[in-house]
Length: 615
Image 1 (cartoon, rainbow, N blue to C red):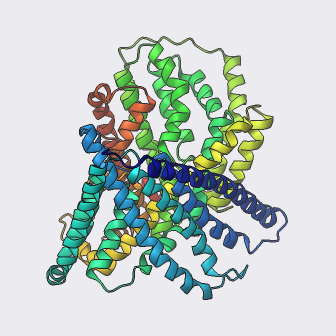
Image 2: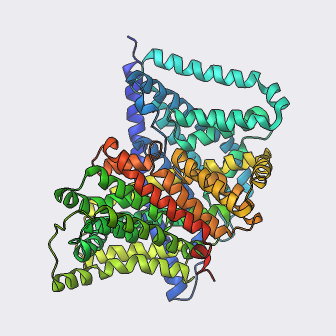
């Protein structure tokens, strides 16, 4: 009797299921179309010397539809980035209550986007694209349809398995908070920029701690700030989200995501790991060397550290455990290797940093490889000392077998190096190279490794859309939040505070490293970079720090925070992938994190490591 009416809950579940299926089919179709369009552009530009001027424009339009539908898929699968450390330790009843609150926040945020989005769509009717002459309203219409799907999913999450008491309490909390903010409007006007703490620390921080997805935590705090403290129409939120997500460089995101998934499915990743194992697996700590080397080679391509780890761990970790390795030690190595590889091109983090800060992607690719190599070398040295007392267990692989495995791995080894070379040398854009990589992986999987499971294609396309949507929604809401902070004068406040840091360049770098380590731990890195990058990068330039070096240092610092307990979600992902408990890994990960911090200090102290190869 205390439960939500069964008929209503069932209707919402069925409707959400239909919406989810439509989203998956449409998003999968758009991924295929994007690959076809972009690859046609490559063929016409580089082989036929007759560029198709409409390719980028159409690709960008469909991309916004794709990531909007992808965000719907990520919501239904529970794949949006969120902090669960606090919520997971609460009793089940409290967790259920916070799930309702999270769903209510998502619902309010989506309504806050859809309503102004309709007005924004009307305004965009007069904006015509230059090549295809498509009204801007068409672009916004596709996004609004996806947000309507979003709304259905959020309402379903709000009502599913809820009791009437939970729903009543949830709506009461929302109503009380809304009325309180309305009554406090005169106070917000009186305290000036201090109101930023209420919305962007209080509301955003409380939402994140309560398990609300980070994208929606940013969205609700931005909408509330603009609604309660300014006279600016909420259409600006939609406008800033669109601008944040529509950068042409971000077209590379779904292409690199599907490329990483194809590398796993077609056997490319396994060929790389088998080759590395054959050469070093028989030595003391040999498989640990192979683990770090494999992460160095394959990392950055999938767009997800969890995907990189999942491609390497199943090949190496079972054998490492069979040889007697401590499961906690394996998790520590897996997490440290993932943190080390954050700046290895073609890392999506590098591409996104370039898009939101205006730094050349090619320069970031140039600057990221050597610092990662320094970090990898530091980890290898640590493994050497920690494995000195072990005895070699693995069998030595013969010369002919090594040669066979090396030859087998050549097509796999060629892919990441060709991608990095093509972008760094300026031969093609990151998006074009990723598209070529997708086609290359398909051909190698079918004709070289003879591993191609057609049944996995649709799930891969859906997963590509979901991960891309989760990433880009954060970029969109963080862009809107960053705009609001800038308009409120927060950038000036940050500039004043950072200018007062003693020690000049060194002091600024030290504070930035600490800041990005904390932000990387709490906000999972990428949202922190999108939010604070546009504010801090100009300041770094003012104190004489090369922005490429600053980007590399910030990304490495975020990686350390992301994979460090107790808050870093990457640490817990590593525990799941390594099939170990956090209690086993917790005491063993610190030597690896300390080693990475030491490598980071070297990268920060020696600018040449990041900018020495830039033209």
